[in-house]
Image 1: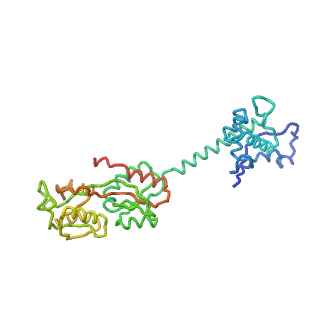
Image 2: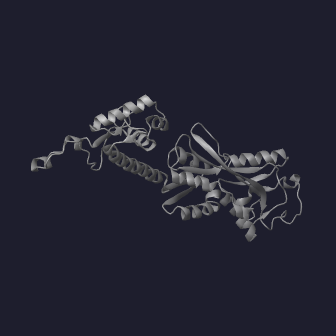
Length: 345
């Protein structure tokens, strides 16, 4: 694409070419004035006049040497000389006094140098300002999260993020795990936050943390006051489980099997919140992520029993579309999500 860049009036007229102004002349630009409109294109040095050529010329004048100016622009001396000669032909004016050493600009060349320098500085300033706009953190970040993370963990990230970036906002939707994946794949969410995230050909994963899992009961449960437990104590106990198709259910079942525990599953739910309600009515035991029950532990509506399952954790991660570039706002919020929870330490 060719960009026509008007230079400020340079007052460049060849010696002996000054003419008295007439009404007709006032309405018809002189050939020299017409040539103050320099074509700026993306072509290489040596083609039509472009910003690279103008920068080369400024460096030659500043360094008072064609060879040093060429080196500063990573071109050969012959290519630099040819570019400046083409520039002089375009302007129909001598820009350099080649009879003097070190090299000097002519009077017209000095005036042209100042105009070029102003143009180049303006271009760099505009490019810097556009870069800032490009990186501005603004717009909406669409987040889909599983209930246990969305309800208990997202507020500590959303509040500082929106305070730091007042032109950005976070739109949070809590969903079933497979719907979190669907939302990201269908471009209904920029980020998905869920447990047991799996990378695929379409999805990338950013790991967040691994949450310890604990055995949970109602405070009046017969095992609640025991100071120590062994896996065999759970055999035959009523158990409130996650739905069969969830990754967390499969992980818990494996852990129980490895410890030789057979429980009686009396209820199955697809989210932590409903399981906590079932425990609240003493429907049975369950194994839940510890961060998801901190509030209930503090209120003594549930208790964590003294039996651990080594290696049983719930991994939490972010999923996003593979190959899709994040906007500045989405990228900054993803970074915010990866910050550790200092209050939990």
